[in-house]
Amino acid sequence: MNVPLLGPLSLTGFHHAWFFLFGLVIALLVGYYVVIQVARRRRVLRFANMELLEAVAPKRSARWPHLPAVLLVLSLLFFTIAMAGPTHDVRIPRNRALVMLVIDVSQSMRATDVEPNRMAAAQDAAKQFADELTPGINLGLIAYAGTASVLAAPTTNRALVKDAIDKLQFADRTATGEGISTALQAIATAGVVIGGGDQPPPARIVLFSDGKETVPSNPDSPKGAYTAARSAKDQGVPISTISFGTPYGYVEINDARQPVPVDDETMSKVAELSGGSHYNASSLSELRDIYATLQQQIGYETIPADASAAWLKLGTFTLALAAMTGFLINRRIPE
Image (cartoon, rainbow, N blue to C red; front, side):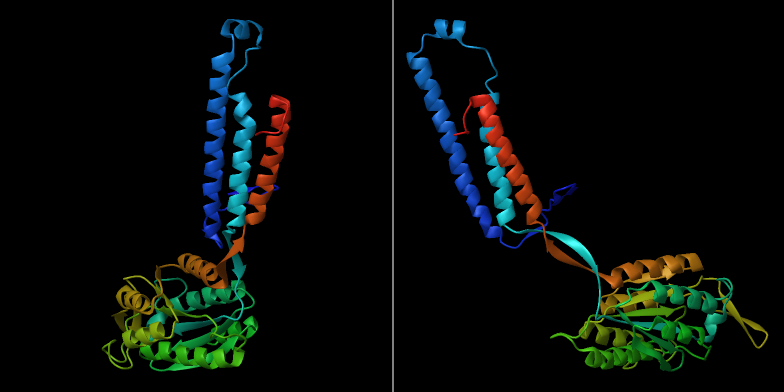
């Protein structure tokens, strides 16, 4: 919750939760106040002439005299929350992070089930992703078919990456596992160069493909996609997979129509094994939406920020209100 002039009033987490033990003191004060009020009422009823008291005493609500005490207790609660160090989530741009964009350039990317064809749509969306990604993130590009090649090492120079995307060319076969392994090698190399921390920079692979792995035929083989995904998991590099196309895609090979349906199963399994997430798109607009989602996930991180100032302000305001109502209602500071 965010209140104007106060700031975020958050209860999502606490740095010093043990300060809530002060609540026991507040509970004792409330109990003491109740006992005092009961004892005072008994003394009045014991010695007062009730007929005379009702005749001369002004009639007023029995609740209002307790308002200052209630406000005082609330202010103490607010101060206790402030001392406990409440936090609220803040999204900040990531820096010192690595993202490898791994794009399938096999012949199936010629299919025109996505206009103008799968490759052209992939290039368009990938360049938009490069433009919108947080500037401090190092972005690299790998193209893979039967083999994998690093077309752009991780860099913050977006023009260099976009130029490499424009130069993607078709090739035979699909070696998804090699594409992932090449990305992991590029991330390890760039991590050493970047440095700047006790831990390796956070990294992510964005794997884009439309078809099933053909080299090797078994994704669980040493160079297969599933084996590479497990390696990514071990290295703490999640893979966000995007399967692109429709079940009705085809390409013309030697004047024959060759079906190239999109393969969601392999890509979904790769994401699962690596600890990442899987997406599928059958149009350029859907692909752009996916890249926009990834940009938000990859480009920003959520950290806990201090939210005690708002509770201190609220406690101070409530304490001042308790003092003011004490003078106005009871003509004294609340007991």
